[in-house]
Image (tube, rainbow, N blue to C red; front, side, top):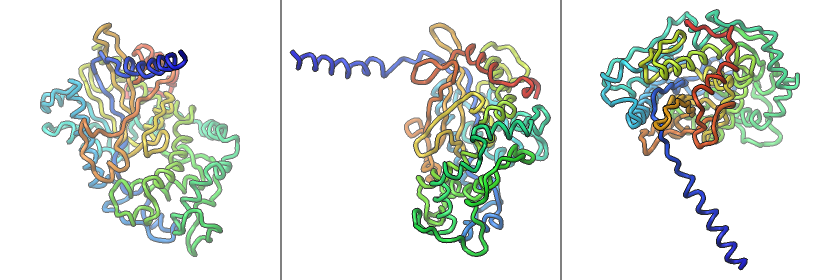
Length: 437
């Protein structure tokens, strides 16, 4: 009797997934907003600066500091080609580029690498059409991506410092022990000795040990809301590692041969930490990301209703909106809505080169209800390094994203549009959003 009961229970347990694992998606994609980071670039700081922090010279990239590399442009085109396949399969695009182009809107931040990334993405998404990428001049501040610099939002530096220190127990230096493993790995790579060696050798003559510079939180400069002292310097010193790997430099040039993809990812925890504190902290996210959030939400409402709305992107018939900026912009919007993701090979909430938050506006074919579905889509580190051609059978990595306050309990965390709008109204700071710019 007991054996029969166990068999019955076991059978029931294994049968349940067969019934529930393949839900029917009866929704139709009506609009997609792709908010992505630029692709692979050269390090932000020049080698003349970086070399003071290492025992050996940093590898030389083919372009000046902070510019999109040729490989970065190729990777963006590969990514755009994948979206073309996906959106054509979803019947949002027809595959006839000249016919699809009027329904696609591109906007990039003023930084050269974001404009070039948008253009390269467009070459993959609509290879047979001329696409205009909207952007302001190089000395301007785009209110969508830099509302503080554009005068749309006002940042209270004292409140910003207090908000971040409040997350750190009032003692920023405590991060040195919390991230001791990452700092030790970084030091070993910069100074060229095996990780875990004890005792660790002293800093080579003429170099600065970035891992010993005091960590603090003080007012920043234009475009950089806060300064984290030594942690900000560590960010610049470790920034090249991800780009060295993703650019496809020889293994001997990726952290001077001391870093695998896993090591690159571990060191990126430090830069990820700075971005989290500076752009995902609730006060800072509210000031710096409310404007772009308002535009994203109003664009979806415009598409759902068919009525033109101020403060939206494109027009009421726009089907695809592509926004290209930096990791700080994606992180800020994610922080505002409390969005989190994790892709294999990356750190939690890491904004990888070319990676994007993707907002899908869908309509139920049975009820007519509009829903919002969010995911984070990015090429893996190895797909970047190997310039892997992406197809529907070999896609980039993707993770469904839960929307706090409105996602339902299904595999894609769908949220009714009206509920998403209600969440947006709660998190967006009205005085930091402009319905015009």
